[in-house]
Image (cartoon, rainbow, N blue to C red; front, side, top):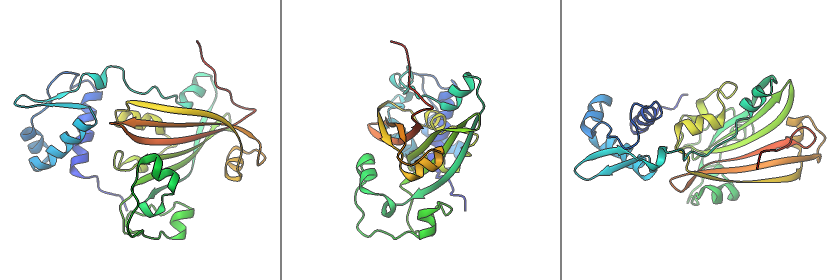
Amino acid sequence: MTKTTPAYQRIKNAILDNIHSGKWQAGKAISTEMALAEEFGVSRMTVNRALKELSEERVLERRQGSGTFVAQQQFNHTFVEVRNIAEDLKSANRDYEAKVVSKRAMTAAMIGDKLRRKFGIDEVAAPVSPSADANETGSNLGIDSLGDAPILYEVKIIHFADGQPIQFEERWVDANRAPEFIEQDFTVVNTSDYLVEKIPLESGSYTIRALAAPNEVADALQITPQSPTLVLRRQTYSAGQVVTFVKMWHAGDRYQFSGRL
């Protein structure tokens, strides 16, 4: 069952689309609350929520008695520069393909301690036990059957170069910040590109480590379990909060990180 996007989120998405397209430029005023309420057929309270959240995310600046403006600092080349493996491989004249292994919505009861700490998720008083099928296969997104709203979205994707698996991506995304993320076709849409387009990412941090491949990763990369891998862990922030955390596993003999100083 497709989840209906809340009205305030549709307004936020429309505002971001207008900013990204250049219709509303940095420092310029956007439509008034009344105009937006009429355009979307909602109350001014709903519009106010959308504007308030975008202001907290430092996308907009609300000026008492003057209106709401596109924040200068947010769109002055402050987006996190995120590498796109699809574009990297295509630029190297290699055939690229993505295969989605699984994707699921995770309620609070399904989230382990490490992810709770990563996203700053509070403990729930009465957790709901997810079904085994939803937990193991991801075939049931859990929005209705678990009786609880999704907190995080999880996707696992294998990226191929010339038919050979080159990267195994495990990604978790704040479901409130990107409510339509889970509905995307990630064989066509790149996860990082989608998030950069929809959410103003302010900063990020990453680590690169050499680790032995656990069984799931080894199966995905078609290597022997415990073989050496390079693992890039990255988290990106908006309004001071983690929007997404990703682990990208690479077979040690097929991949290297390089750049210019």
